[in-house]
Length: 473
Image (cartoon, rainbow, N blue to C red; front, side, top):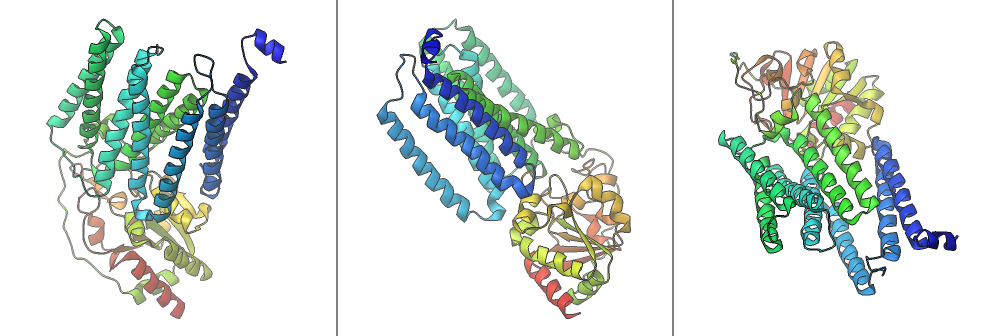
């Protein structure tokens, strides 16, 4: 067998390496498949991580340079030390991070992936053996946009960076994007001396870095889940470009999987919001039509005892979780409430809006952590037809995803976005700390409706009060 491989100019190590990449790709596919269900998601992460670990180990052992030599022992030691340091840092952060800060963590992790791909492209552009100039430049640009854009997304999610909705921003972004395209075409043509090309590459890096910032700055808070998903796809595409530079099948396939999954998720989320991706990117979130006059009405509060009676003697109850649930860390006690009501023969379901929270699937992650059965999580399109027959809708920290202005107010920034039609239920109980506006910073007139009662306080404390009252009935 070795003789046959030798005659083909292929070593046994190359065969093992290529086979390991194929096996790693299979692990990635299994991991992605298992990530599609909360009950198997953790196991799916292990499958994908196992595939990546396999690709790293076999690369260090069997990879050959252009001169036919393996990776130097010194470099392997450096790689292992860096992996160890990164693993320790990652483990510490993952264990200490609060569930409310998960979107910020996702943004930072995504930024590091983009930065890594951009650095690979920057280094390889100076490599005389690199013949993939266009791919290298695309990896550089996409990677650095993913980095700076994700860091701005982190700042916006963490309240450190505000929105800039100035009308000129979209024209500025188009101008910067045009400069990036012109620079890529000029550098790829190779008409300039190599030293000049290197200077232009650094200029391209700087402009792309700025573009990532200006691209995310004008995007409104309610659009952040879509933006995070889009930036995640950018990181995957940048990783695939790095794979093409090194002709590494594992990097290519891994990048393609991440990029395609992020792109599909972005499209699905835009569809769920009844908006185009372009509409999200330019920061134009609805509005502009003729508004309708709303009467503010009177806020009607409900006590814990009255809310407990109403819930206990209902037949159907729907819980709508939002970011306030994450802030209060109330997912576990919320599940306790659901179980208690079910013991009283009340049918309880959780209505999940595609963009509730601060990242894709935020509410699913929260409720899965609290071991809420997945079959109780019902998507918006499936739960809305049942709303008129629902006795009580309990809204926990959600605002924009239940705001009727999305349906009837053309002047509203969220006009046209599909919502959970909580207002159609027989009774609505809204749990909030106060009358503050949601992430889209607009008034929610559902709070003034005749069938709505406000239950003020921290979500966790409020639910605990309800649980105690229901137990005493």
